[in-house]
Length: 492
Ligand code: GLN
Image (cartoon, rainbow, N blue to C red; front, side):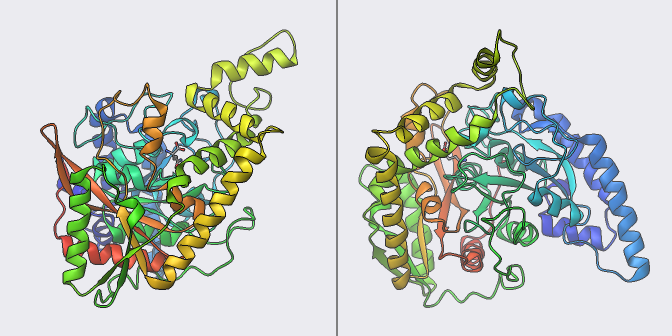
């Protein structure tokens, strides 16, 4: 593999800026890597090679012109990146990992991806994912499972499985993910990269295929905290096209990244996230990280988040309820798969039966059940009450501490096929991440260390949770952790 693929995004941007490399050269190197690896890793559903080369050439021309006129280049000028296949990309197929959208070519661009191209980034392609972002392993994709570069017999986490695999495998410099219950942080943890889910409302959801609209949030996946901050800086911000996006100004995250004095930083460790029976190796890696913070002067406090034990159950009511309603639009009428029936109803039934995989079908059934009259109060209403409790408990905890640290996931990457027959076992992997979505808080996963499992080394992520709108805080703590941890060695 050529050395330039190993550069961080920040290094690549610096070299693009000083003319050491052109965007066309960099893009060709990335495309060659993808071509050589996609059969095995399966990170990309669609590679937009021609478009990438045209965008790269345009970027090189723009940079030249900007130099002549003294103008500054875009924040990601010339950088080859990729997007999860649920961001609508005008003219490029967008499947959301589903057969029902196999032939869907959007006529418009999502706000987040549009901002990336406006900043000069080059689109390498669309990344594999669990169907409609439902899953935690990538195995629910209708386009085959993506593989973990640390051990290709294992999953790369999900639902942003292609994003984590591609970034970890040097098949792009950074990628977008989306996170409804952990889909950025958990795959980041399982592939040894950084993944940040910002506060709900920080990024526009316009043009993202919806799963559970009150939880869905865009975010960044990259190999370093600095690179993730770079992407966040571009994609965050208010959008009149999404009424849930916040009008709050976006701070200079990148500029403030390195200033943190760990001395006096108050770190909360929730008792409920360090339970008996959890993977001792994962606990060990996280506690080692916490001890390093302590040695550097941080103050560690045990905190309580008592409703945590209900969070997973509540999430698996709220998310399917919203999914059932969001997925109602796939009826074979205006776009997507259509299987003709004798009449309208039969066309609906045939199209949806053929188009959706098992997991979306399961969620549609659960979602409609918990919303149906007679059951609404027992399930959906109760779940919303739990959600309120989670919000309150986090708010109380943040009166005592500046950030909360937990493992990102209870286990390292598991084997492909190991959990497919047991959906509940897979749901349990989300125990430490869904709480953050339910409360709308920002969270980041940063590689903490490695554990050994059945003879292979696997990464474990440290989750850092912050107050609402305090992405600056978790990015700074994440960056401080990178320094305390030292060099991070990727799988190859
Ligand atoms: N694994 C969780 C689920 O299946 C989270 C998915 C996500 O964040 N998109 O719902």
